[in-house]
Image (cartoon, rainbow, N blue to C red; front, side, top):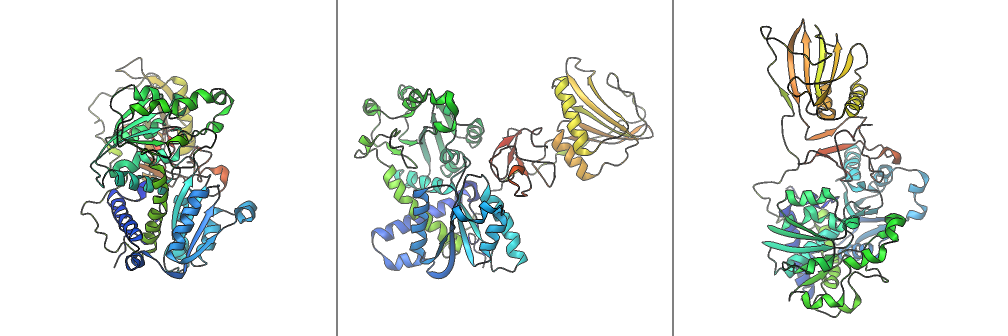
Length: 527
């Protein structure tokens, strides 16, 4: 019988569907009640209880709370728990991530918990280790759990946050009104909420941060795409000046040290805008709860310690919920629990299916053909038209040079920047190559990725035999000349991890890296 969770990985929060997360939260609630009631029989149902089952913690970035939370979760399960010493590890000797973790997987370790400064590590290892397990006859593929990667995501923090919100919502997932305050630019815990809060049916998000610390547009667009109502405020004071105040507030620590001297010169002003002050207390609605991923900055806490003894304190219970959620997550990925999960009839799918290569009728011999200024008809070959339409002439010339290099279109022919007959104020690029008769499906896909909006004409004996109008593909991969431009991404060539670039198209027409989540324009992804 297939187990829906065994051997799964959690690199980003979307790796678990809404239905799967709700199931995880229901199990966590059961566990919490069993612990409170000291129900040992019930607790035994959650435990892996196998001294040979290997769980490995690899923290390549410091984090006491997350590491100890996972360590205690693993101890609950009574399993073999190991830790990798990064100070003397093979990473410092130039060994790749894939080689290191494949070796550890071969030592009968089934779950790896990884925290790193490099983004997308778990996604890559999930792919690499699956191939290793198959090649070497391992009983199952290992699971990888992202315990925080750079400023990308922190999905297990998101899980414990969602569980706590549900707990304080009387277990209702109908609606959520939450204010996110603090460093929304660097905070990976709030970035995970762009997708994570979809566990609630109706979501209203208030973003509180000065422009220098504002949520990246990429994440606000994701929220709006999910149907969230999103509002933005530059400070807590501005937020409290209006009436629609959230009953749940989520604070993050400002990481001003990442932003240079110019920001540091204004740090007091920026901190004040996102720090709760005692004078704000009368303006806070009854039953409001504050949350924080912890730790607070001891010198500049955005939630001051005078609030610890008030009813606003939801962060302490939030923190303790972390171990419970992680106990359940480890139980699911080990296969110990989850057999009673009912798969929804309608499954959520990532990405989209679409025909991005559109074949259109070509002109017949009886029709008069029109040519752009400076372009003369060719009797045989290809013509790529409408390149970079609407761009400046310089941008179009640079773009055509990239197309020529990527597609290997060197040889006879020419490149032109022209205006169309319909709009003389709009420029476009044209590439023509006489005597080039072959243009295979792979090249057509590549052209769609690098020159969406263009038209390819295949000409023989003076007639257009085939004509294609090209659109952005839903994903781009398997091209050696692609790369993510995020220097902190595991797939960036500077890290020499040999990770092939992979991009998904977003609803706004950008391309987002499969590993780190950074968005690019279609022009930026090519080397």
